[in-house]
Image (tube, rainbow, N blue to C red; front, side, top):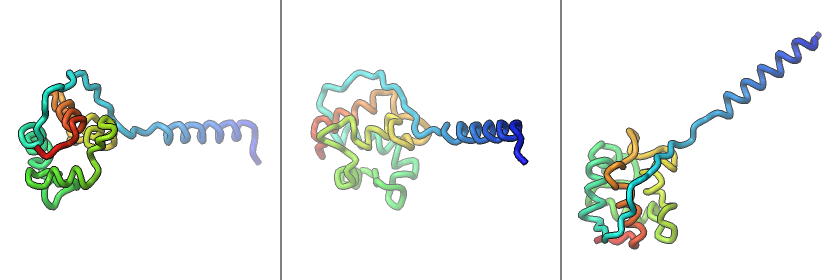
Length: 133
C-alpha cells in the first residue's frame, strides 16, 4: 500500500534523479578577447606552426592519429577535404569552434589555443578564403 508520504518521497526521488540527469556539460566556451587579425595570413607561415606546436606534435592529429591529420604536409588537404573550414561562414568553421571551445571537445584538450591571438589567426585565414599559401 502506498501512503501519501511514500508517494511524496517517490516523486522527490524521481525529481532529484531528473535534475541530476539534466545537468550535463556539453562544451566549454572560452571567451576570446583578442583583436581581430586584419593582415594577410599565410597557411605555411602562420597556421602550420599552430598545428605543429599544439596539435600534431602532441601525437593526437598526426599520421595514424585522430582525424584530421594536421602534420605539415597533410594539414591543408585534411582541413579542406574534411570540411573543417567553412568559407561561407568562417565563425562556424569546425576548426575555429574546436579551438575556441564552442564545439565539444575543445581542442587542444588541455585548453584553448589562445591567448596569443592564435584563434584569431585561424579565423582570419578562413575569412581570407582558406588558401594554401
